[in-house]
Structure formats: structure tokens, C-alpha cells
Image (tube, rainbow over all chains, first blue to last red; front, side):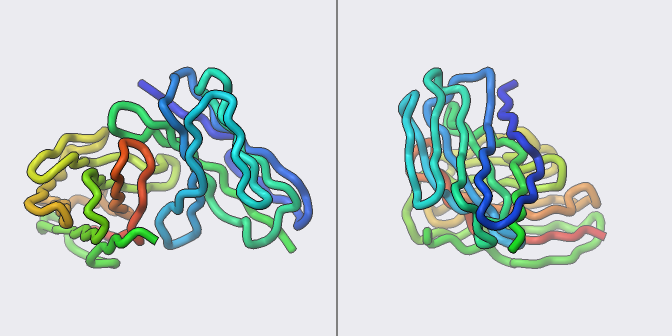
Length: 109
Length: 111
């Protein structure tokens, strides 16, 4: 069974701090996606990474795909209250996505 | 935003009654998915479709059936709802076999 483990599960920080969340697996994925979900809404795609070692930046968010395409990280610089939400990673395999349980981030003003 | 709608958005029903949830897309994407999301379990795939009349089971398909007679519509049916099916249900669409776009969700309560 393929699994994606996300850590930490919960994170509460002050506005302006930096943070990193991790997504790890023993399986290789053809691509990996990061999503953000706010309460009462569906997940919204942030980024897709495809190549091992790939780094993508989205404003203050930096995403990295591991060299072996088994893991990924999301780094947020100078977090803001608007970054609050559930961050989900998902690995693509055999026409489906394998989902992590998510990291619940709270950024306090 | 991808054009995905789900109906109804909220539903309360009683144990043993049939329930059908509808997902409608205007993007003409090939793949459509039904998930349920529960605390502690995350997103779990119920069924998915890779074309009209082509569907397959996900990891939690027991008690659920689906149909896709048109590209734009994917229906999820609970033949006889149980309390364990109380959940938030999300539909997603995809053109490639990875990146998925989600609908707003349906909150279902089975009493």
C-alpha cells in the first residue's frame, strides 16, 4: 500500500515566522501536487512538481521535489494569517492520487 | 477556477434511504473522481471515471455506486444510506492523470 506521510500534523506560528512542512513516502511518484484547503471548501491546487530535484516558487512559498521523487517539502517565508489552512500533498500513481493526511497550519496575527 | 459544481451542497437524510449526489463540469475533462473526507482519514477515493461509461472502484467503494452517461456529469449513489456514510463528499476533475481540480463539496448527514 502506498502511503504519503505529512509532518507536522499541526503547526501554530506567529505572523512573520518561517516554516517547512514535509511529505514523505517510500514510493516513487510520477509527479507530486500540493493543495491548500480552507474550512468548508474543496482543496485548491498550489503547484505540481514533476522532475526529481525540481524547485518551484509561488510568491512566499517554495516547493521542492526530492531527487528520488519520493518526497517533497513546502517552505513558507514570513507567514501571514492568510496562509492559514490545511496543506495537502498528493502523489500521482496509476491514474489516481495518493493523499497525505495534511498539515493544519494556523498563523496568528 | 475550474467549472465544477456539486449538488446538493447540504443534505440530511435518514438511514436506509437512497441518496444521489451530482457532480457537473464545464471543462470537458476526461477524468472525474468522487472522494469523501473525514477527520483522521483525509481524502479517500470512492470511485473514479476515465471516460463516459468507464468507471472503477477506489479504496472505499463499498455501499456506493456511480454512473457517467455524459462527459460533464458524474453521479454518486448511496443505495441505502448508513450513519457511517455521514461525511463531506468532494468531486474532482482532471485532464491529465495527476493534477485534480475540486468542487465545493457536499456535506451529507445520515441520521
